[in-house]
Length: 393
Ligand SMILES: *Cc1c(COP(=O)(O)O)cnc(C)c1O
Image 1: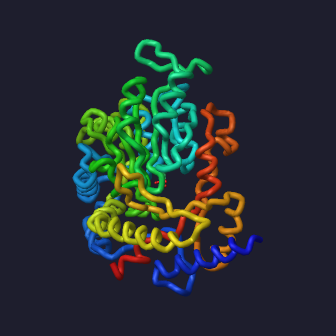
Image 2: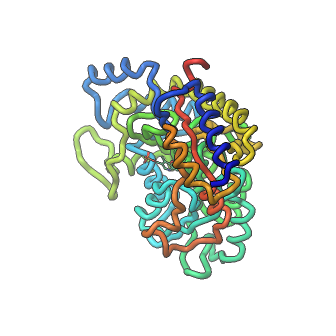
Image 3: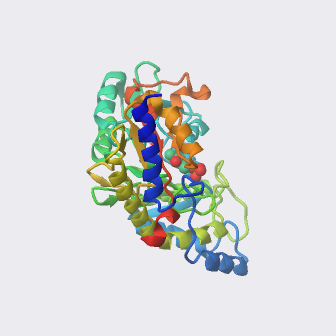
């Protein structure tokens, strides 16, 4: 191995431990932090007897989410994947449609499209934001798309291109204004996968409701957690009504009758999970501050290591820095770095395998994906838990 690289790897380990004021022990990637009213609200929930799919915490959690994000409506679901499944259907995605989605994403994004019996159509990423590149996508759609009435048709497959899913990777917002303009120009729905981006802003507005719908996740590794959970965000009252209807078995409201008007889903977030969520949301501003302080420390620490760069938020937005990350300048060395960090007790991770390389999505349509590949080869995510910094914040 190159001498300089092994010196830099050792310096990186020291830098991370210095940033976290932790010189011993195994450091996890992203662990939950409970230091507010969690016990109180969960106990209140148990005492009330309302632990399942109805209760005051679900309603309060939705109201708190809408207030925090500025979205008109929030609909809580069992997890972020279920939220995506519902959001895509409400956005008009039908069996046989194509849905544009980043190849650089967690598998939930792509799975939700497949659950709709739709076909993912993979798009490339932008080096800076790690998300969709609106300029390159616009160019691509002008070449492969042909309008037929109100619908954009893929001239190669003959299928409608119904929607675009963008994903705010690691919390860094994509460039939403040109994305919204592009969707309007081509007549496609916009769904934001903001699973990683609760607390992130684009030009002063919280992400997740720039298009028709967006989704959040409250899985255990996200910035706030409900154990498992998710939510759909929208500014449109009718879309919110449909999302809630579909996620609650499409039951028609009535004091005792069981009438349902379509195939719905049992996707409602249980009240006991929402109780946890209400307590976590109270701490969210402090969590975002802690993540951003850790970003400042990492930025300063990695500044003096020539072979890597710290991944910065884009200049048009404010990231929640859900996961901190570095890029290696020499991609070929990634696995050596991963092994070195792990053997030093630091639980770093590579980013996800590109979706178009997974066996079930290998034969789906895709634009050229060179930048996503470079990001995938060069990125390493770092320990990012709120609890690593918040005590001395
Ligand atoms: C976490 C996550 C989801 C949803 O995950 P759930 O575990 O179902 O809540 C979706 N997309 C992305 C990009 C995610 O990181």
